[in-house]
Amino acid sequence: MSTERGQKQKVLVLCTGNSCRSQMAEGWLRHFAGGRVDVFSAGIEAHGLNPTAVEVMREAGIDISGHTSKTIDDLGSRDFDIVITVCDNAREQCPYFPARVRQLHHDFPDPAKVRGTREEILTAFRAVRDQIRIYCQAVVIQHIKPG
Image 1: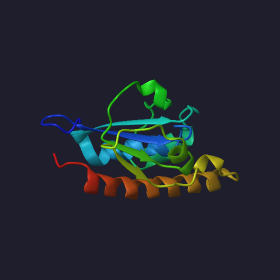
Image 2: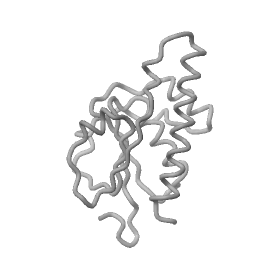
Image 3: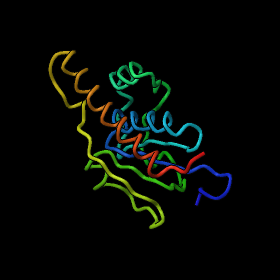
Image 4: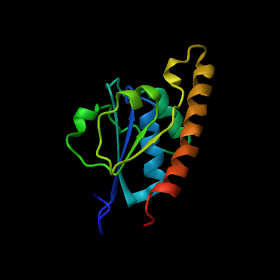
């Protein structure tokens, strides 16, 4: 387990396409946990980083523009301490993890599915961003070891 003395906890955020929700969660977890954890995000599929997710995270002071969209297979055989699924599809498709891995789940709406005006789309992305921020802050408080 990576929580041995001197080792950081490893956290994986998993969603369907690794384009919006898991990317935002990765950004928030890094922000709230600082250097106490290694955070990764992946999808069941890789749909590419959504530019609107990058935009709304930048508005909140978090830069995820350097993130890349990847699948769980792209991460190799890392051992994770915490796996967070951020949509029901990812939870249902989630690969097997050893029993010692803490698995958390919250089904956030997919802002990429919203149709409408630019402002309506931005509003949806901002709402999900803020929901994910609150959730990630709670995860860090409840599940990440103090530095």
